[in-house]
Image (tube, rainbow, N blue to C red; front, side, top):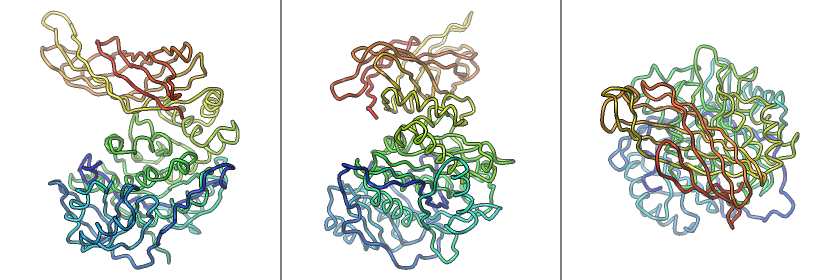
Length: 520
């Protein structure tokens, strides 16, 4: 993940004012191995500088975010001990403000003028996984949505959770305190680890209901920003989400097994699909998004769209009665549904999340209806679940649209994720996919303009564990072509590791891609 962050990969990031609402956190399951995530940890008790815009260059790429100047967050590979990490940080002009060595997390103070230099030199070391500024999050709303416990917003989030069949375990305040509306990313990371450590392998459900953007007022329309402001918004959103996802990825497997977070997507009308696609290319992040995270959007905000990602497998739509106030009140309802599915169908937190995602994918509007999710969870319980991706299948086809209308195009399937439910003789296949067509030669109307479309391809599987076959299809609209029905075929088996392995192919062109979907 060397070239990490801070590429203007689609821009990315900011303002995720966030409340950590713990929903139904259960104690350690019997038989779970014990790991003290806070062994050797220290907590920052100093003051935070006034947030400001920070501009820096990483590997020749200019970035700008709003953050706490002179404060950085670094993730080391856990094979690097605290002494080695400390030595490297000090050698590069930093000093440790707080640390959680068990997950390789270090909160660092530096001279703010050296931000870019510090990131570049640290990232050049093989023991370092990522380095980012300590960006901030804060509440944004015209209706007193305050991202802290005991205030209107925290109370509204709790009420929404309970109205959607959830139960509250505790609310942990991650703001600066004293009535502040600002939450540093470093405090949020510590709160996540606190909860994971407390439950130590038991079910941990966390709702992050703060928001990220460029303005404190709500709504704020991303589409109306100038180019520089759009880049800053995405840079900040990316940096924040990366920090949260990397924290989860750094948890030991036993702590992550029953760990689920719902996150408010934001209310700024900002496309986040490209950001999430880039994040999936980074080490360990695709697995976390697939298994541990549910990003929650809504269509219910008057006059504006929430942050969105059409076709993304890990973003759902909730249109509950309070979602008109923003995604911060859509996310806790999603968590309430997760608890209702767990309690009603006796499935795990991760299985409930899969049911939510599949229920979203089955609805053209991506809205989750509880009845659909419960039915899917019942099916999941009776079989086994497998997931994998992203996968890419690319080939060329020739179209003939009449006289002088022959052309050759590249046709690509980008499978963001693949989810399979399989009971040994039959199952279902769900593939959120982006299909792209690009003209190679010739001239014909179906490929007159290069086109891209996103759809969820759905289908069925049959056979036995030694021979699983089936297909998924969807109709795509590409450029000026008429609607194009496309199919992906699967042929595989349950391998010796208990995973579903095989190949995807398509009748559209010759060629296959080998895939493995891990047993969940």
